Amino acid sequence: MNRIDRVSAILIQLQSKKVVKAQEIADRFSISLRTVYRDIKALEESGVPLSGEAGVGYSIMEGYRLPPIMFTREEAIAFLTAEKMVEKLTDPSSVQQFQSAMYKIRSVLRYAEKDLLDDMSAYIEVVENPYLPAESKPLHLQAILKSIAGKEVLDIGYFANHNQQYSNREVEPVGIYYQGSYWYMIAYCRLRKDYRSFRTDRISYINITGNHFEKQHPSLKSFLTKMKQEKEMHTIVIEVEKSVLKYFGDQKFYNGFVSQKEVGDKVEMTFVTASLMGFTKFFLLFGEYAEIISPPELKELLKKNIAAISKKLSA
Image (cartoon, rainbow, N blue to C red; front, side):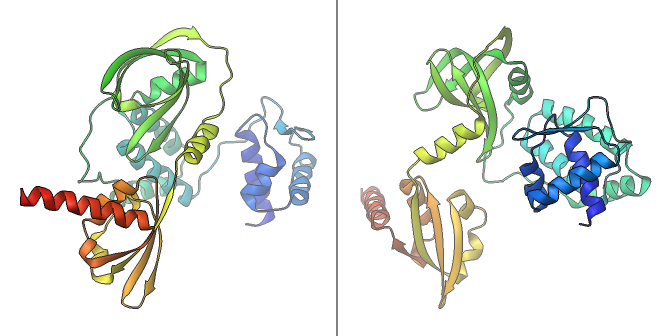
């Protein structure tokens, strides 16, 4: 990217939020802080009303706006890709809001880009996994996001799968995240007086109470980092005959696939998982064509599984 394009992009970034740190700009464009300072100075000399404070960041005077932004072909296609993902991975309310935003985006595109999106639409699809049950339950994503923005307490009905119990709760939402085909909400539960993770499709109803909470909760990122650290992760190494690799499909990713390398006529595969027992179930699908390198505990678990199956078959 040449300097003119970069300075223009920095100006757009400065308009994207109230305060932008120099390090954020440096990280985005892979440039030094010294280069950032030079680019900011160039913007100031061109008449852009900027204010900056050491250790805080840069901001543009309220009311200053660029003329309508023209998107590139690549940016337009990225929006189309996101639209396809929103349609399949979120709920009807989120789809409706995103489609409304897409109309606004399309309205500022040149005719060539508008035609491009119409043509490219047929070449991008997000296909549901045929091996997972189709879900049509409401996900409540927009209601949760609205309550987060307004710091409003939510009244929810929730079915906890681990103890098969239903309860009514008031919660203070922190954020939502997507993992393993499901959406989750992290929230402070007033019933349990602690933070909890709620799978949104198990929320039977959700009401924004209108009651506001003042507590400043930790960030969603800090919760996700803590959850990752609390899980005991296991590194698994196996060798598999090349002929069966084609049958793995996406299942290897669901079971923590990390990397693979050829070892003679076999392939050595590395996985990282929180559940050795879960991995044994996966391994049984192709076990006759594979060998466990490590850890030894996985072999023991597998022996117990096979023994239990043999006992059932001989009964």
